[in-house]
Length: 362
Image 1 (cartoon, rainbow, N blue to C red):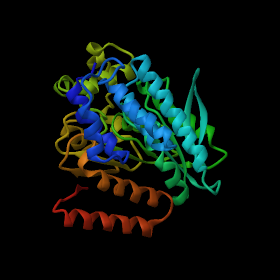
Image 2 (cartoon, rainbow, N blue to C red):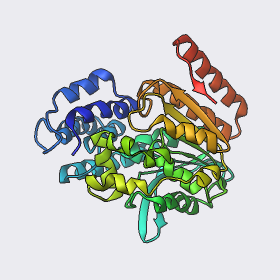
Image 3 (cartoon, helix red, strand yellow):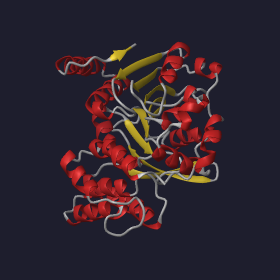
Image 4 (cartoon, rainbow, N blue to C red):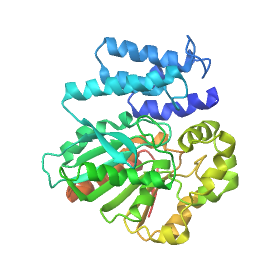
């Protein structure tokens, strides 16, 4: 199981992404003394209590996010599985009340995969598919359902393999989920113009699918392993315990077998050269999981590679606003709003200049 200090450190990124204040997060974390169990002081209990309070206020979106945090990093106990189900139920109530989004089912082989979908106003609108990383649920990305409609794109959001409502195992074959989602919504939008936004380990699956599907027009990822990480025994050995635990769930293997399972996933040099779509990669220069050799290698091999690098740790948690601006500019570009895309990029440059920070990019 993941270590408590690590879990407290890592959950901050996701909680801030959800809009919770640092003081609120610190207050909850101060009462947690164990990752195990379901009584007072346990991880699942303290976050679930806050979720229940949000439910009582009919704040279903906050409740969903808090239940999401309660099952963090993975639903490995009855109490955490219940929290995951409560997250789904609360988010469904929010979608119904807000009149935004629907639950859809795609078929991947013998498996049914539930995803969130928001159709655009026009059937010729492009598609955007989002998938989170190894410790987040699709509901965490629910804000994109509303944003997509504003920008003129259909939006589909899926769970990472082994998480939430995604029954697939994390391996190359799991990349088929992108094609399955496209098949399910193909009569409601223009899937021949699809952009994938997939942070961290989800970005790997996007790259795998992009190798064989010409309908993919671009990929945006944050700290994704592509090849170097999977081959780097030192990087795999030193990954945080919370990452190893979540990967063991996604890979359906014991934690001691994670390194060997990951070794089979590395993209070859020929495959990296074969990624024929623009690949926008947000890198953290102090990433404690993904080595710098990952994006350095990709930069030299992927034909249309765009690096956006910040001085930060994995996921760029201290640059959430900047990362969102990068994603927004690419969404605007994808939906044919080039002028607005350039405007957002200018805002990003000004923000970094006034903050005394520099965006390394190519």
